[in-house]
Each structure stands twice: as structure tokens, then as C-alpha cells.
Length: 538
Image (cartoon, rainbow, N blue to C red; front, side):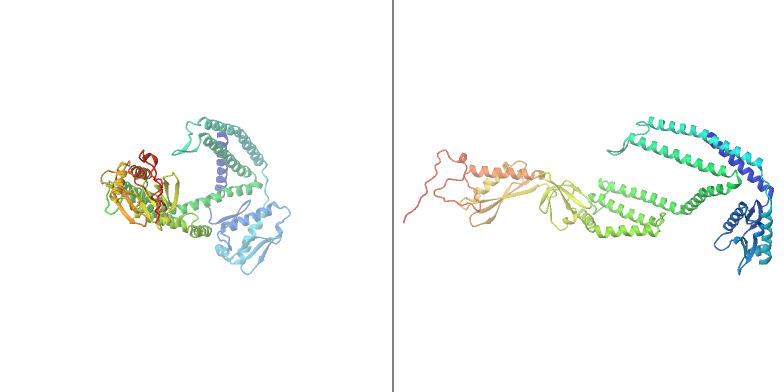
């Protein structure tokens, strides 16, 4: 491979030396303008014509002269002058080789007619020169071409060996330098897959380099022979023209690129500064009056979103395709989709922000939202997740939180504890003081119920058949509310049954003189006998 590249450099140097010698043999001072050539340089033109620049115009004339010289059927006697209103044309069998304008005449300091005759005579003389075919130079060029092809084929063998060695080296580094790519606990790419990707990239590079070398060799080979020099120039232009445009485009875009880089860097460090204050407030080291620590994270996320949106709006016109109509159309289309299909999502986001600053609850709180009771598992801008006592995960859209009431049992759990209550109905025949004592005793026997402050009872209503008694107890174990209620109800039943007091329900009816008592058998006296049903006769 080194031999091939060394030979390419040698041939390019040879071509440059030959061009330099030819240039020095013509003149040491290059005239202004672009040369019109027929074997030798005939004259120079400085002016363009119509939409064509001077260079494009001269290239067109040189191609037509080359066609004339390559066509043995055309004779110099067919060279004629055709006069028009604005220009005078020099033609061959109806084909215009060159048009002479007033600007060309002004360049020579002659009028239009004399300038046309001047160029006509030069062209006629140049086209009638007999070219001596250089057989010696042709043989040398053929030998050089064969040497180039041979060197290329010889170097191709070592080129393939070189890349095969690279493939083996890449496989040997699997698990060593080439390790698996992981993001936190997720393995994004395994080492064997990453090795395979690198090998495919190396194979692609091998093909690209080979095509590039062949493409560079062809113009060199074509430039060795006069009848293929046009092809060589065309191949070189196919490479140089897009590279030139790309270079000019990069230079023109450089100020915008620098602006984008500076904007991104400044934004990044500004966000880091905001994040620093967010952490300080969140951990309680920085106190801001009226600003709660649990507001730090959502406020940071809101500010971050606003800043990134403003930065994106600012750098959007500076992007390479930012001002194109197609890019604007796609942006408008996606904006329309968001406006039509994202109304509910946007409403949930706004509601999530409002709920955050309302501080209704936080992660881990035991809450009741509508008919759902459970612990808050997750809060996001779109929804809130509640885990119920039955281990059900219920997702509630944030917009629903603004239209329903929220009960937070955890925030009510102050130093006196959360008050739990339940209601029992007892008939009027039982003294209320006895009911109070039995309910308070049942509350004190219940696990996780605070002994101080003391449980207390409210008589909430005097109904038609019974009195409603509400027992109130305090607890600090809000996560065990269900168990506390269950134990409290059990203790109430046991206590009332042991005291011989019946718990009457609204729809329970009894004939008092002859019915069996509703107290369980194990709580009745051992000598208990159900009384007979007595009927009084008038």
C-alpha cells in the first residue's frame, strides 16, 4: 500500500513539473483572463457573455475547438463570420465556436468588425497548424500507465492483508478494550455486538479507501494521453467541485456554529448553577422564606424546561436547515398535532404544577382522593399513582385532582396523633354512661391506639329505635389504619357481649318477652333459660 501511495505522489509531482515546464516555456508573466487553446494558447478572454462567466465561456470555446480538431471531416475553410445585432459569431458548418461582443472589442481597443476579424484569423491559423504526433512520448506514457496499474495491483495484495490483520486485532480486543456499554443497570450493547459493529465499520472504511484510490488513479492514467485528458479533468472536477462547495459552506456557517456552541456552553453552566441552589434548598442548607424544600425539584424542572425551550427557539434559525420552507412546514405540522392531540396532556401538566405548589401531599403520604385510599407512590406532571391497602396501583390524572377533594391522613398525624372514629347503635334501654365506658375500654385495648390523650365518645344522634355513639381514638400509625379499625370493632363486640349489652342494628326487630337473647352462648350465664313468650288476656 505504501508503494502505491508513494508512486501516486511521484506521478503527481511529475505532472506538476511537466505543467510548470510548459508554463515557463510560454511566458513568465501570465496575461490577464482565461486562455483559448488549440494545441497552443491562441489568445486570452477577460469578459463573460450572457449568464456565463469568463471562465465558463472559455471552457465552452475550448471544448468546441477540441471537437473540431478531433473530427477529421471538418475543414478550416468552413470557418465563417456571422453578423448579428449585438454580436458577431465565428462558426463552423453552422455551429458557433465563438461570439465576439463589444466588450471583447473594447478589450482589444478595436471596433467590433475588426475585433471579429482578428479572432477569426487567429482561430484559422491555430486550427490549421499541423500537429506532429510524438510517438516517443506516447510509448513512455504507456509504460508509465502500465507501471501504475502494476504497482496498484501489487499494493492491493498488501492492502487486503493489512485490513485482515486489523479485523483480527479488533476481535482480539473483545472483552478487553472493547467492553459492553451500560447505562446504569441496563446493558445497552454487549461486547460481542460492539466488536461486530467495529469490524463492519472497518470493512466499510476499506471499501471507501479502495474506491477513493481507484478514483484518483483514473484521472492520472487519463491525463497521460491527449485524447483522454478531458475525461481526467472531468473526474477531477467531480471531486473538487463538491469539496469546494462544502468548504465554502462550512466557512459561511462557521459564525452560526460558534454562536450555537457558545449558547450551549453558557446554558449548560447556567443550569448547573441553578441545580446547585436546588440541591442546597432541597437538603435544607439554604433557607428561602416562603419557599418550601419540596418545591425545589419541581421548580428546577420547570425552569430547566423554560430555559431549554428558549435556547432551542434562539438557535433554531441558526441550524443548517432552520430557515428552509420544508423544515418550517414540518415544524408547523408537529405543532398542529400537539395543539390538537395534546390538549388533555397539557391540562394534566398544568394541573400537576398547581398540585405541586398546593402541597396537598408528598411521596409516601396516606391519602384519600375521591373514593381511592392509599399511599402516594409517584408524582409526575401528568398523573399521580396511589397504592391501596389491597396493593392495587391506581393512576389518577392530575386534572382530576383539581376537581375532587383530597384527604391527607399523614399531615394530620401531628404530635397528638390522627383521630380515628367509628359508630355503633345501642338501644334506649341501655344507660348511655355504660355505653361510654364500654367503648372507651374497647378503644384502650386496641393495639396502636394512644392512651393519652384519652379516647372519648360522642352521641351523634337520637334516632327512632336507637342512639348513635361515636368512639374517637388517636394513633400515630396511620399506615395501619385498617388493622386498627378491625381490632377496634372486635374489642367493641367482645366488650359489649361480656357486659350483656346488645348492639342493635337499624333493621333488627325482636319480641322482648319470649325470644332467645342475641348475646353469644359463651357469654350467657350457665343457668340461662330462654323465657316463655307471654300473652296477656283481657
